[in-house]
Image 1 (spheres, rainbow, N blue to C red):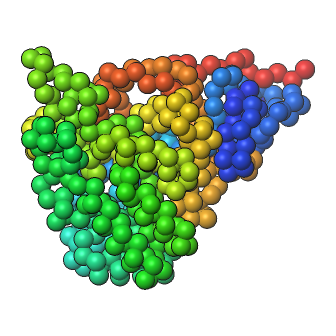
Image 2 (spheres, rainbow, N blue to C red):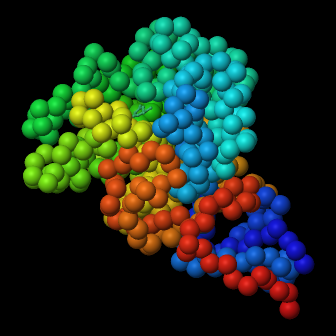
Length: 457
Ligand code: DOR
């Protein structure tokens, strides 16, 4: 008998929404999870396709609150189609697209364009984020209500901060009325100035302008004060400094509606990497390489920052991991460090990077999955909780990954158009084997093993 059912057998099921971490089976059919647990043969439909999940982790599909898909306007850097394939390969089934496109997402027509393109071209669910300000210029609020009605899930001028404090205050007032978060890229421009990397000994050694930690921390402190004054919903984008952690922790302790995210690169690499891959000078002459693939905003920082961020992620002070996937074309990066574009292509390496923390026992497997699923879903709001669950009856958005599988990052194999990553040539441990969205297999690696279809005795 023909059936669209798939059985994933003997996988380690990690479902933080139900505090579940045990070996079992998942049955998918008609786009949903139909059963979970230890399933006897009588529960399995005749002809069901069977995947051997032994040694693999099955979790809800990952949710990314922060990525740049560049469409419309910068299709030479990324498209919705390519970005969605990269997401599927990275285990993401829901991704939120930042509005620094051209035109920017500051009116309903652009939201509708993205939604239409997503329906036509995307393998994964794409949730658009709208601008805080008209044209992302930072002077006047965008039509936030119109954007909310069109379906944006948050507001942000990311790539730039909402610099004007009164504009941020007004945006936060609207955010509480609309029930949607303001995601701020916290950068005090009068402190970051012309900086291109973290302030510190490496910047001094290289003679590059540094960005002090206070450029991030002063704006987070301002935004927390404004969230408190307005009752607004603040989500702090890409935390990068040790000093940002207590600001968020205290705001939460005071019961404010403040959440935060951190990126894989800020958890696993430091400003030493600017010297060349993983801190080793790599030019043929043995000189300094100034690896522009490490140029990102906020910048890679010192080891003590990395340690504080990892601890805060493990503790839950930081709610979630977001990729800040920022694909760029080659010519934007093959220039001097000063002139290179900020950004790293992350969707396809995020899991491998984060698993380094799990293997090093700095983060439990359950916490890692939580910060990629229930954590971001909570930031989006109650109505998104089903996206982060393997509960029977929810959509079959699932990632199956092998935490032990070693692989070497080869950007020529990327689905993303952005090949800009300092991880090129690095061996990571842990890789996606299959991704399902609404029950459809949207990505499979060569390691995925199907067994003979199920036959009832
Ligand atoms: O590195 C970054 N790249 N940080 C940002 O905030 C923006 C992003 C981009 O759009 O390229």
